Length: 453
Image (cartoon, rainbow, N blue to C red; front, side, top):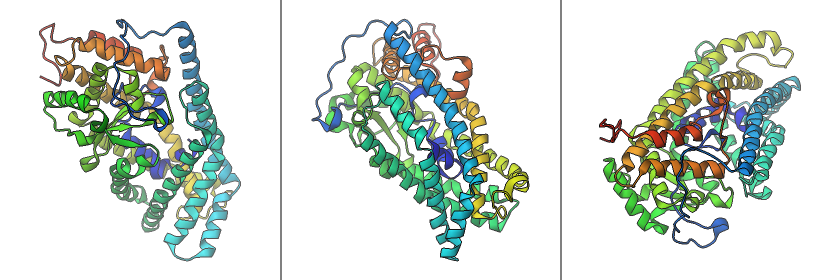
């Protein structure tokens, strides 16, 4: 979304990057994932019903009608990805050309001399402007999801979610913008480093509380054990096999079916907030063995330390992005700053320039971040296969079946190009995951498994 892209340096770049290794997302090929049973639109919860018997999976395939639909949907999402970036750049350039940032700065400075209160006035005005100007892209994205029968969310509910997202961005953005300009005023040579240091604990705190405070604003959650005690008992066998301690109170069902038909599961939070979350849509479409594999995959993120590896990797990337922004902003201001009505680097009105630079560099670094994400998602696939081996009969076929269902429901592209795969995919393509699940069998070859001995 344009509004969130606008906050890249202040909120979303790092926050999404922190979550990216664990979260599965739409066209980026989410990890297979199931875990609970709740009927759509808040209907009464019913016990999990066995899914219809699945035909043996030999490769990721789709019937002709669904194949055409998946290809059309995927190509539309690919186009939207690049259009959204270009639109966001143009939007920020228009904000600068129309001198909206200097206007909001003047309002804030006339209202108060206290810097924090100026940030309270300036930041929401700028974020709201960019959010509203970015609505056409956001609306089109939701329309696309509805057109291809992925989203079932009404426009009123969608608008309320959009509003809540903006309000959250306001709250966090005010604090980060205030800190950013405090360190710029302190040191125009090392502000990028000081801001990086100051922002990390704040954004880590946001990531910590997100499962407890932010996520419930958008979806309903309940303990998995409340509706699926039998399933939880089976999952605890997998936990024991992996030598982990993931108590039932860390396993949650998310009632995604009120808004989407897509399937997903993820690990989020850390420390006391760390948890495994499975969407109810997943459990409605998959049988228990496939749910068990999915849980094994998500458990792999716990065991293999992917949360902290992701935090360190993307914190490092954020460091590089800030340095690049610092390296180019003086040249940019010297060339265009006066025409945009910007007094200097420590001027509130300079913020869109910094965001523009960071957004461009962030886009160019997407292949690197997605390559890292695909790597750890593949590791989680390996772990899921290993930890369920011997617990789930024919675990490779079960995993392949889970990926096949995921691809059918989420309309995953059967044959993405190598360019699209490298640039956009934060998970391996479904076809690759199916092929790997069917071929990975170190036990029959007398080899030692990689993670679960």
